[in-house]
Image (cartoon, rainbow, N blue to C red; front, side, top):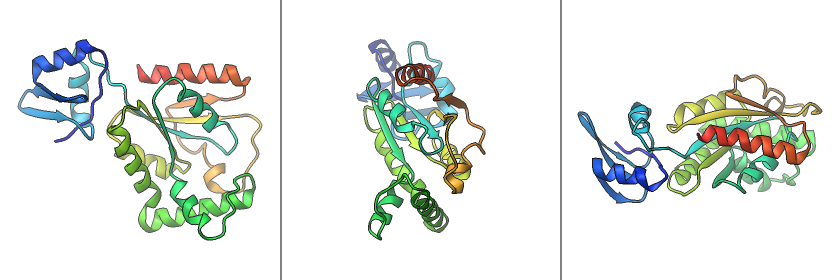
Length: 224
């Protein structure tokens, strides 16, 4: 069974060596009663508590499914976090945009018609072959093998959020970014973002520097 745990500070790695073998950075063979588990690849919740309860260990990889109506400042906040932590910032709409560009879409996101077109096209592919989630899964697998700590996954639709949350096997949190002065875009993906029970809500109504600092504190708390 392959798992993904990532730890920091040397004392943790030394303790891991005492319990098993260190074959490469980020790969530890821990001897857990009745089973030996190679901690590499995909993390298994069954062993989460046992592994993390070992004194001196701290897992530093997390997934944050981030959502919010168009224009609330999600990317700006994620870009700020990338200045402080190793960050991957991906969206389930990315493969849909590539298809749309090849068939006449002009790349604009600021008009309701374009946003509805992308939302409808995404639903079509989600229903047909689950392309948006498959794309996220592939990016997530790359993330597990990288030195990055945070995987921001931008997903709009409640059912798609739940699907990816159920699939991810490392600590995963859902986060909604809000802003008071946001108008309707005229499509369900944008306008129904509140129809999910998120783990965290962030009100992005302060001045930019203050909001960035508050967001940094929130993300840092998630990593603890």
